[in-house]
Structures are given as structure tokens and as C-alpha cells.
Length: 163
Image (cartoon, one colour):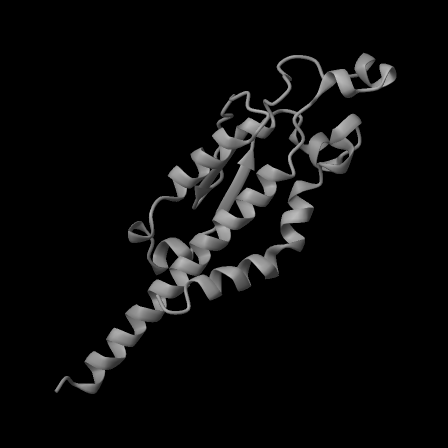
């Protein structure tokens, strides 16, 4: 029969792993929300006035949506210039950076986590001020992700209840 202290250590490790996995799955859920709600710049759908004031290079339709990245500990200052109106490339990049559960422990979970987009016009995209056409319902992706945070955490907890 094991000592009581060994049982406590086993329980501690179990719950630390679950906490780490909940944080990991929350990061993945929030990053997907951010990417999904990111506009991609369908210029033909813009009004004539908006087309005359569209962002200048390096802006390209799909560059913003394809430029999301993830880091923990400190935000990246590197722009990942990927043109991708679907957001698939950003999602794959983030999933790869987050890694597998085996790489997560309580130390990683306790760090700050950053979902970043370092395009020069990211703040304008978040504000939604210049979005037109099909993009008018988009933008505000960080605000939307923030409002979905409690639901993302609940889902991550449920997913890892028996982990």
C-alpha cells in the first residue's frame, strides 16, 4: 500500500495535467474563433468609395486571415505573410505551434498565451471600421473571442473531465 503522500502526489499530477489540457484546448478553441471571424478582403464586393480607400500594399486579400500565429511566454513580433482567405493555413500553424497534449504541463499552462496577427493593419481590421461587402459582419474578432471565452473554457473542461 502506498503512502498517503504518494497518493497526494498522484492526484496532484492528475489534476495538473487536466488543467494544462484545459488551457491548451481553450487556446485552440479561441484561436479558431479569431481566425473564423477574420475578414479576408473581397475587393470586388467593396463599394466604389471603399475601393478607392482600400489599404495599400502590403495589404492583399486573405493576407490578414492567413497571418494568425500563436506563441506562449511572449508574443511574436514576426509577421507570417500567408495569403489564405480560408484561414486554413493560420489554423494549421496555430495547431502545430500549440503541439500535442504530451508537450503540455502545468508550467506551460501557467504562462501567458498569445494569439497574434502582426499585419500592419490588424487594429483597423479589429475595429471593423473599413469593412464592407461580405466582410461587414466580420472584424471584432478579438472581442468575439473574448465573449466566447466562458463557453470555450466549459467545452475544454468537459472534453478533459476524465483525462
